[in-house]
Length: 186
Image (cartoon, rainbow, N blue to C red):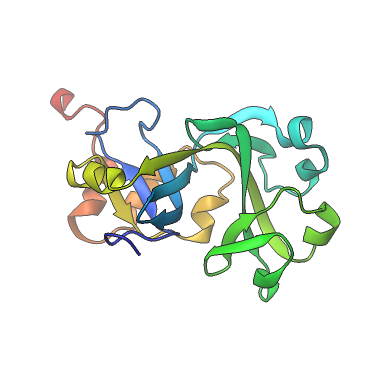
């Protein structure tokens, strides 16, 4: 854990975040250390089927069977986020991030994955922050930091993910779920 952040937590873009790459996004943190942080945007599905880019992985991924836009960094690369079966955390190619949630090496033959992974989603690119950068953005009010659930990663329809995650938060934070996009128009 670095500065109260740890892998498995979610970042929800606040209305104060002006970067269009992250407007209304939910980011799953996959790695947090003294050198920075890395995560993937959970609610930006593309129209590109996984099978067109990664062949047989299209048969293994969660529906919708499309690549998700994981972030603006290294969009020509892919990260696979998986939920291991109970006991599957030690499977070939799987690196745990938070409990049974982890990263799956896409060089692993798919036949070795069957039975060790319950759910899988593939992201093109990722979101990355240098040392101290994410903490600064949080202090500026650009992100809400909340606990994540495996269901958040693998939702079929991600359009309302930001609002649904916000609604389950305690206290005043849940009120942001009903906030209009432009409060001045209210």
